[in-house]
Image 1 (cartoon, helix red, strand yellow):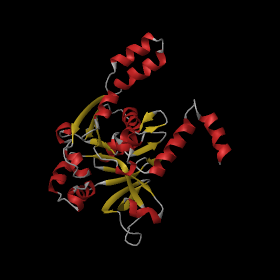
Image 2 (cartoon, rainbow, N blue to C red):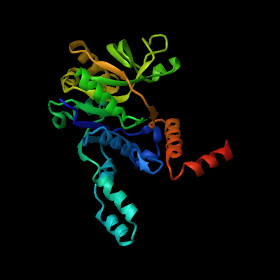
Image 3 (cartoon, one colour):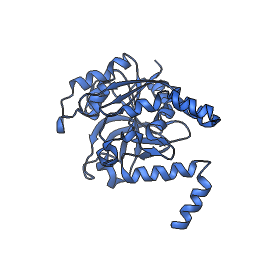
Image 4 (cartoon, rainbow, N blue to C red):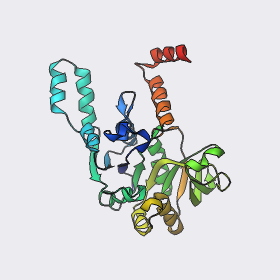
Length: 286
């Protein structure tokens, strides 16, 4: 079965960006001229997925408002002869079939994914974490769905990291079965450098089979009462086997202040309207 649906969890508090996220969802923080979540929706559309569920929490209505129509603004732009801006605004509201469900309690990523059970049904689905952006020639999710089409099994998006960075990620213990593809033998959440089985790190992109919901329901809450997706994936691996695919592209952690700034600079340097002047400016201060 082809991957036709996607889920984007966006219910977190964004505490690393306080005080800005006290009144603004972290997913709405702007990278150059559009919010971070816009890039994730674009990635899904470019991968051929247009049925998207965004899992929101309290005070996240701005996300739904962003992807909704704004008739007053559209009328103002059209009457003012600002056709280009009008078309841009209208295009955002027609990007994809976007649905919403509220995660009433912050009980971890596993619990957030479980909120998508009714939407997903018995189909495979893509999962994108809103903090992670990936710039790639072939959309990251397209790379993963192509691999899913071949193996019809859960695929975790991974990349290698420096050894001294493994304690920041879920790490894969796996056996290479072909270029860029590992058969997963185990997963370790944020191990110490000494305990890490590899430096192959999970990077916020997945294609999951619907079996994951049963595994999440079996997963006991961990630290802070949160249900971890990694724990559910380990249960799934015991029963059906899963794979990790090392995708091509540059990944940005926009949930981290430095990562956010790096993404902003590099996306600006790729922007045709800004790149030349911005590059010249950077030369004057570096």
